[in-house]
Length: 435
Image 1: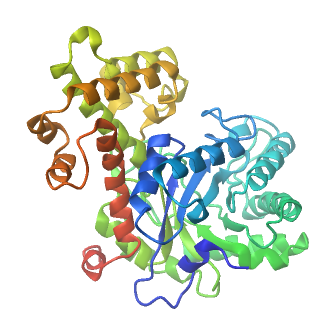
Image 2 (image 1 turned 45 degrees about the horizontal axis):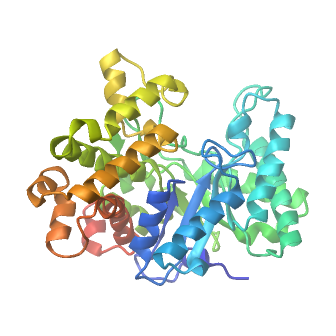
């Protein structure tokens, strides 16, 4: 049974086959930007919720899988995007959320996590058992990771049969999975996964599937997560260099139904993204880079507001964000080392964008609403727009968007997605720039 994402695995698409952008964010403005940016196309839009954002208990967003699906579909209806072109995925599904528990207890939660995603109609599932649980001793072996992934697979297939999705699910596997949301420590360079290690991972999963009587599901595994030497930390981006993956790229030569999936592609330059797709990483995941762009737009608008709106009427968005992050430091404190000044700068500007955990905070959300309302009523002088959001200024001047503050934020996010869309249908000139 075909799936909208099967097209990215097809190996007969010419020298530079296309890819797909995986939008990994639960923020409504990001989802709206993704749907608006893709509205004029004809291909599926892939939107994925991560297990820390959305789980059977609500995650940090307060949403369960069915809630997130409803949110996405409500936005789609509002902007006029066909819901049948939306593919929902679950990212980093596995014991990550319950690592402090014994493995069997954690995997019990994982069973229900997977079941809830499939029941809600998500058809792309990342089976990520690369994190150790409380009673695991030493590094996890490929065999153990594969066994746990197979347990998840069995749960998913059983639920798929119950809800009428047999044959419709697509899976992502792997044991060298980049840290969700970027590295938490300084990085200088990265070594790509070796082809040998990739093949060991594939073999371990294939055998585990067989032992569980699930050999027939192997063609539904659409992607393998490996490390292509792509990452970002708080202050630096490690860009893709294809000479480091010549060996790795051969690992899927005998897997005609599988491609590579690239995590942590946020902030990669356009040439690097295009070359990743051309080299076989046909699923490009981006998350923090989108909320980073959203934060840039909102803070730029807040700076404009501070100059043209009476002080007592201002949203004071930046100050509200800082106050709420200091009041609830659990999402950033252990990630941002250094002096008080270093940490203050990181809270606002870090590539890892830990502020993304706070946009659902009631006070921050209210401040965003006040900001957008103030600037909608006041209007933004074009010269100020040029100073603070020059790319959006150009698009306003040429009539591509309006100067409505919400439209400006949406377009700032969509600007990142336009780079991904170009990379997923790459041009020779862009690919050549990364050789």
